[in-house]
Length: 247
Image 1 (spheres, rainbow, N blue to C red):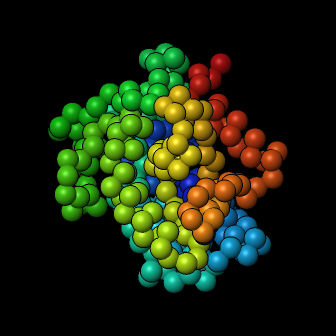
Image 2 (cartoon, one colour):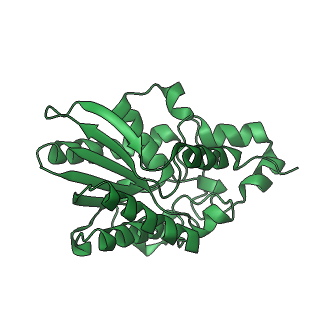
Image 3 (cartoon, one colour):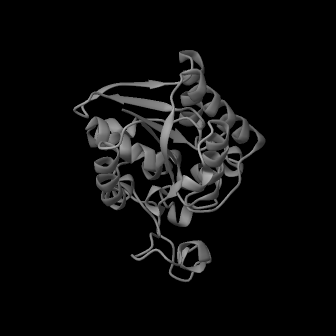
């Protein structure tokens, strides 16, 4: 069995270097091309997909549908779960990362972005960015997040993950999850049994399939990004540089 994790293609707010969180934004032209490239890489590796799971945010859904159409996976069989949504960035949502670093200090923004259990400033209950004011989230039967740390994302993702992995390990074939930087980091932490410290340094590029291979006993054997090493390093360096003060 193979499990493929795919971060959505570049979104408009990725391009603008904004904290996106639960805001529904579209893919850029580059993001669309990244989704196409992801599908082509799966085809080249002859990785046939049995199930596709994604979040309920547009940038992930659009990526999943582009990939599904190209690999001939029926789009009506794509499964959706809000628990795969990106980390909610609270009061930082929509702010430019570099401008935020200038205002609060680069060290503080780095803590908000990359620490394990320190959430960003929380939204006020009457803030128009609060998820309760958006119809897409009205059927979520739990307290809606107003600012999450990675630990919070893992806590809300765990029920999904336990159910999902128990299902796919008894299902033949390969499985694709299209989600977001932090929901995928949460899965990676669980899959690889990483420490709180180790997960901080994990950077997931947009639009690059990450393939985990398992043996018949569902023991993890290997992982591989479907991209050449130089391009992977370039993309990861770009992620690291985001949010820094532009001098």
